Image 1 (cartoon, rainbow, N blue to C red):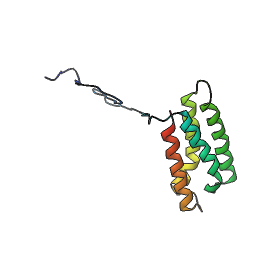
Image 2: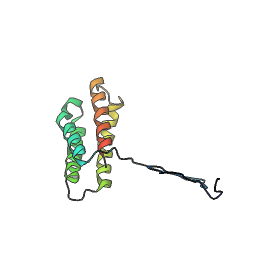
Image 3: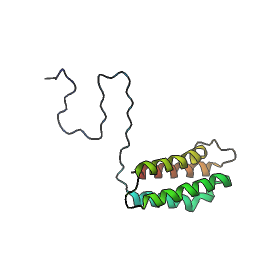
Image 4: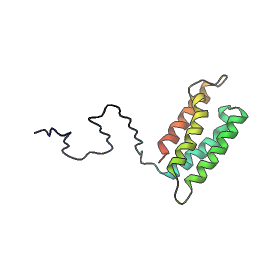
Length: 127
């Protein structure tokens, strides 16, 4: 028997987004991968350890080092601000994203693959 007032759920509903009766809907979801801040810190440190392998310009490498340092500081804070963690990740993603997609002239395929893998690891580790 359906309820004419909206959807009926029989059983648990987890990690879902539902909209009905709307004309314009914008939904965002950031599901947790079960990873934690220690994973984020380890992934960020791995990025810093291999940053020179990416062949970035000195300016881009310095920007990533600065943002990564701030991200590591925030992740180790008593009460980390997930919004700030995401903003710092996005700044790092902007630089590495161009490399990962091959948009950086002269970047080797190995550097692009490494950048892509590092971005995927970092994104999965974000809270």
